[in-house]
Image (cartoon, rainbow, N blue to C red):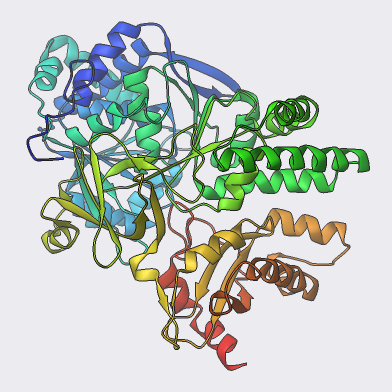
Length: 608
């Protein structure tokens, strides 16, 4: 790829606002999204979507917003999130999504660093965070709340319900017809469109600046990612995370797929069962959770049920082995698999809400090869996509080529190469412009047009990319051996009893591990085995549970060389949530933070 490559054009448009106005008019009363209200799915058309977005755009213009001003959205996924997101884009604003799990200091950083003028909040909980730090945010002029429940009688000069902004916008739009359309027509692919603050596994999050061409490039590869206009999508990962934004906000504009908002993060399993979406994207932890649900369900099944599942799984595994080897399963095996699917596996898919799934994808973190093979055996092949906030999706596996362990080939318009240190470098038509207010960090990451990802990987002869680990996470033992901890960690997380793991051992004689157990499955195990416990901490300290996890560690160790084996482990006996400092908003353990916070526990594994 060279600098002379043309800009990405989608359906004759070179910016998202232009494409949105065009496609929303064309689709009219077709369903754009659904959201639950009192337990009933309510539908909203493309006309509704456009009107609410225009109301917000006009409302912000009435309040004096200028092109390039920043608006921020802090909310769980909901229709108003997308209305504000698209409305901000229509009036030339830069949209900054803030994780709803952020605590006041993190919120202050994101709002101050971005120089935010207008803030959209979900509800009273998020408003409380703002009120705690409002004295330190003089630049924020107005705050709009999506859900005013619990705020009756509350008055604040800067705070108003979203309905008032709609009203202001409608009146302004009637008085200034064509203003938004004029702003949109003058939009340029190089215009800064959104800010995405990276998860921040080390230090405060950095604001990645993503231009319109970034968005258009991601929409141009929609068919490569196998999302089509007839697809039903369940949206539940944070929309401020770029992967969810690509798949649940931008590509639906290009393709016309229908967005369904999960009722809450806690109801995702139930929502999946109700909807049976046709396109499903999830991070590895979600796929691990699904596998754990099946494992738990089978442990409670009748003897006949367990035997039937074992038979069906064995048939599926033989078929998966053939597909991975690039061979046809053969007529007899394919017949056996169809029978196993009809009698057993179809019920498993219904249990998970994947019975209509046409395309499944995983990304945002490495996933275990054993887990991918298990899903393939169930008749649910999962595509792996790879990318970063700074690049968007730049590679994906192909549906008919099962290369487990790789993240596929570069998508059209992207180049991948490996430097002398093994680091993956990326150059594509839609990469980021740099980090806001951080020229030094930008210069470190963006060198001669190539994004230095910080990931270590390999390219095979066919161009398939394999991610080895993060460059900074490679462990060099006291004996000088290089170890990639993510390989061991992914295999440990394949266990239904382990939620997350961090392997330790840099400059040490041997490897150890901090483990976070899967609360639901371990509690279920304790109950079935009559193991007494009072709370999560006491559960983690039960000798029977330590023995259970030791068995899982021993099982995984058999697949690794002596220097890669975990010699000791300790359980993190505190139930962590995304609000805790140990976890990123996408529920990944922060390796460096965990290593520091649990330093005494780690030292005990090397001195005891």
